[in-house]
Image (cartoon, rainbow, N blue to C red; front, side):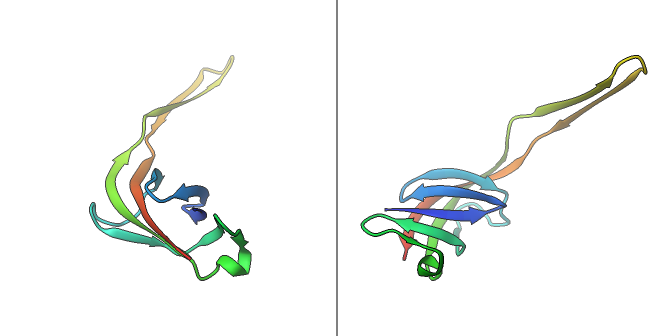
Length: 101
């Protein structure tokens, strides 16, 4: 059985036992989090849209962290314009416990 959930502006296909990194959630490590925005559920029968509206996915927060550093460099020739910037995206690592629906 699998579910397609939406969180942080992205969609993820998850099954029970999966470990995924999602956009940072304001939840402490070890606590449970519920994803209510389920777009589809697959398995024996496929449900999508209004049929999957009452479904939810329960997960446990394993870790809070930051990704690898990405360097952003802007350069315009012949003008002496250089701009260097870095970014590390924050994430929350969750383990999918149960698909309810």
